[in-house]
Image (tube, rainbow, N blue to C red; front, side, top):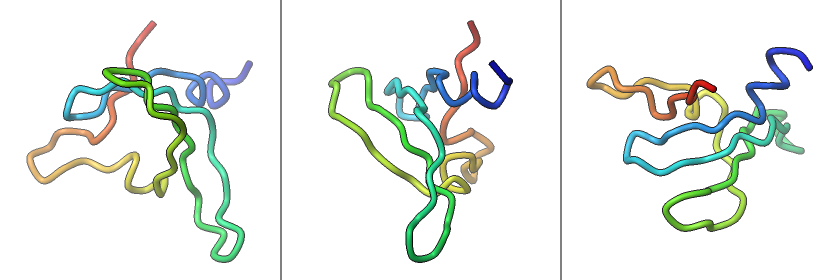
Length: 72
């Protein structure tokens, strides 16, 4: 498994505290924009979500990452 593939299965913590599993990166059918597909794990399992990859990886104004990969 490559590092990129491992990242796609990693659990991330949202800056508001929720836990999410990144499932993969998909492409929008019309714009070809990269979208992160992720699953909400905690506090309430609420299904699959998508977010533009740039937004998933962005840092907020205060320097906090929107999502932080949790280490094994």
